[in-house]
Length: 237
Figure 1 (cartoon, rainbow, N blue to C red):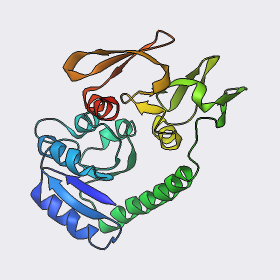
Figure 2: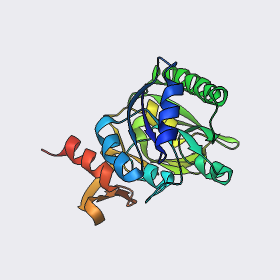
Figure 3: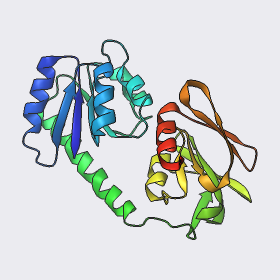
């Protein structure tokens, strides 16, 4: 697993790298002292895991994550306990308070191993266009064909699924759903939305190099600037 350390203290970076040496499954590909330096490294290396401080010069760790076009797993390392709740808006594995001990780091790595095993199980069952899925919304259940789904929208810890005959609010994170969707049909437009490309009626240029999608249902969804780059790479002639 490729990892990046983003921490403004050089001594903290050195100590963390030293503690990580015993974990053969983790390769520290680089380190950065702040989000500004980290971003181009992330774009190039696309690490699977970030060891991320929160309070740093310039942008903070949360702001860095909001700029990314994918969701790496994150182990937060910070001196401030009061950010813990917000940290779980992201793909957080653990939240470590400084100074980090070897024992506490091991607990976080153990959690990471479990998450990777669960992800491998999920990915072993990738859906196809004609797959049918059971969507449980409270007391109601819907039996829906994957290719009929128009889009997915993240709503806190839930995801709203909209298809041609209705919608359902299911208790499953958007990132987990994305892992099972056929990538030739569904595209991650931004942090909140995944869209069915076959339901796109119109694509228009939008602010900061992004796009605005108009779906057949008249719903409009923005493609963020970073996702727009991938959209062009995939769909431009």
